[in-house]
Amino acid sequence: MTAARMKEWNRAGRWFAEAAGRFPDEAWPHVGLGWYHQRAGRTDLARTHFEAAERREPHSGRRLWILGQLLAAEGRLAEAARAYQAALALDPTFVPASRDLALLSERSGRIPEAIEYWRRIAAILPGISRAEAVEHLRRLQASASGPATGRPQ
Image (tube, rainbow, N blue to C red; front, top):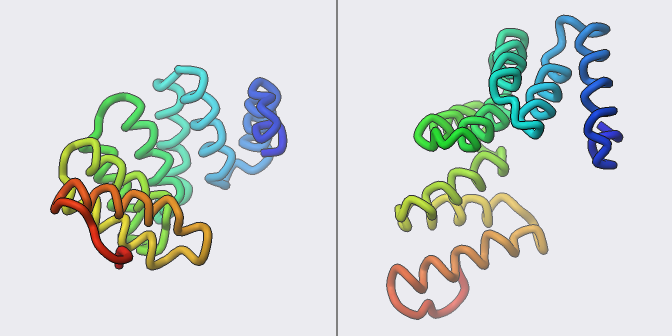
C-alpha cells in the first residue's frame, strides 16, 4: 500500500502479487491486484482479481465499491451503480459508494436522486469533511428549483 501511495505502481503490483501468494485465502491482495491492473488498463486481469476477491470475501462493501469503479471505467454505468448499491446494502454508511452513486446520478441527469445521496453523505460526515457534499447540494438544489435559500439539509 505504501508503494501505491508513493505512486510506485510496478513495485505496488509486485507486492500485491507476493501478498496474494503468501495469503491465498485473503481478499485484500486480490483487490489490490485488481486495482493495479485496472490502473494499467488491463481490465481483463483486473476483473479476474476482483472476482477472486469476491470469492474470498463475498460480503465486503469495499470490494463491491472497487468493482463498481472498474465497471464505471469500462463504461458499464448501470452495472457500476448496482455494485455501489450492493456495497451500501452491506454498509449504509460507506461514503465512497454513496459518493460515486451521487456522481453517477448527477451525470445521468437524475438530480433528485443525486440530491438525496449528497444529503445522506452530508449527514454522515463530520465538520469539514462535509464540504464536498454541501457544495454539491447547493449547486444541485439551485439548478433544480432556482436559487437555494438557507443551508442544505
